[in-house]
Structure formats: structure tokens, C-alpha cells
Length: 358
Image 1: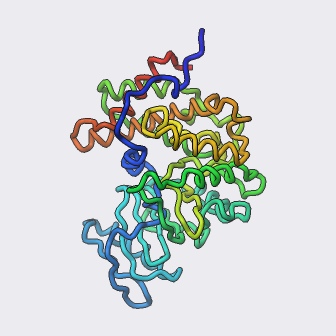
Image 2: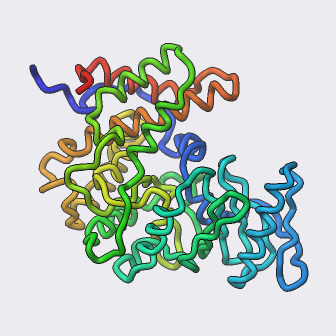
Image 3: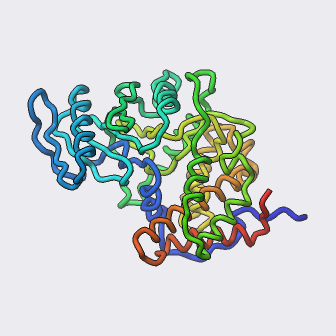
């Protein structure tokens, strides 16, 4: 049977959208830079006794949420934070910023053991200059949430796509991929494939969009669906996109929620999918990929045919993003927008390209 063409060889419809438009979908599902850096999008409030922040929680009407935010403000104060504010982010994550301190309440259901492993690895000397270290490796359990404390950073300006630091991002990913696993404390499996599988499994509808997403995801091998470990596991971010980058003097990677041992090509899969879908210009993709290959990372082999290793992760990310987009549209009782439709169309292209479930 002839091999199906890879994702970048199947024609995509022209689009006026940009990869920054997809950050809406990333924000609906992932721990993005807005989570980890807590941008100053709200006005500061005064601080109370001992520097504990008087946080405005009027937008939230549950006592448990308010108690969680007050505890987070106290944690920020313990690390020198002041003038705490709640920063808007995805609904299952809570972020408090207090000056140069960011406190993050991770999504409900996150397992404490793997997160503690990831925190210790992030603070290891081998990660210096590559992944933002926390202010403390401790994971606080409070009000049924896992909470961590970080330094703040300046995120990528999504209003200026042309200024996106593609080369710096590629070099940082290559540096991360060059860190030997034995130079770090033990890491769990990278969470990316399980995240994708969870989003696809969470689709509750049975419309044509949901069906084609499920069919596209079913064409992937078990390791891309989170059903078995990758055969060549190595240090992997697990959820990289341009929102996972902040500037603290130099650019640095952020977000440990999916860090682990897995398929390093997964970290390049989102921009690869954007390029294949038609959301990322060829010049930007070539800047990113060229810088990554020039940095000498082994994740894509000798670089002669990057798509030999990128194709399956890019298909998986396309299905993941499509599942998140459709779920959000259904939740909001609205039709699919342009980016939503492009993602679903990509799943249809994956199915029509000849992939069959393994």
C-alpha cells in the first residue's frame, strides 16, 4: 500500500488567519504564557497587613475560590510579592500576580507526584537559561488545588506577529532537547499525547465535526494517542507554542505542566501543524525550523526530511486543537469560526489522505 502523504503535502485552503488566532484555542485548553507570566491586565489593589494582598475577587462568586485566591496572595507575599491582582486566564486555572511574583493554581485533577517531579527537574542546573526556574520547588496543596510560585516575565507580544522570536524559540527548544535525562532528577512521561487524547475523548457530540476529529485521531499510532510510551523518550516540553516564552533579560521557556520524557518532535508539532494548515507563513516556518536544525538538536534526525518525524505529532496536534475548538464553539452555542473550520478541515484531510487506524 503506498504511504500516505504527510500533512504538509495535503493542500490547505488559503486563509487570512494567523497562528496567533489559534492562541484562543490554546488558551481554552493549555497552560499558556498568560498563566505562567500573569500579564498586567488588571489594575493593582492595595496590600493589607504583613503585605498580604487585598485581592479583588468580585468576579468570582464562590467562597472556595475567594479563599484560594487569598491563600495565593499570602504565598506571593511570602516571596516578596505586593499589590496582588487576579489575572484573567482560562477558567480552570487561577493566576495571582503580585509585583514580580506569580502564583499559579493548576487545573483541578492535576496529580501532585508528577508535578513535584517536574518542579525539581525545572530547578536543576542543567536547565539554567533554558526553562524558567520557580521561586520555590515546593508544591502547595490548598483548597483542593496544587499551587506553585514563579518569577514574572514579559510574554511575546501577540499583537505584533512579525516580531515573534521564532529563532530564539527554536534555539531554546533545541537547548532543552539537548539536556540529557540523566542530568535531571527523574521525570514522568511527557503529558502531551495524553492531553490530546483527553480533549478528543471529551467531545460529547456526534456531529460531522466530532466524527471526523475522532477518525483523524484514530489514524495515529498508540504512542501519539497516549496509550503507550514513546520508544525513544527524551526530555520534552510537552506543550510548546509561542505563548510558552517570556523575556527576563533574555527569552526563556516556561510552563512545566507537561514536561517529561517523550517524543521531542511533539514540541515542534504545533508550528508544523500551523504551517501545514496554512496559518503560518512559509518564511516564518523556515526561520523556526532552520534555527532549530542549526542548533544541532537530534530530535529530527539529520534534518534531511524533518517531516518523517514531524508528521504524526503534527496530525495529533491538529486533532487536539480541532477538538478544543469544536468543544468551545458548542459550549458557546455558536457556529465554527474561520480558524475552527480550518482545524476541522485539516482533520478531514488527514482522513482522506489514506490513514487508517493501526
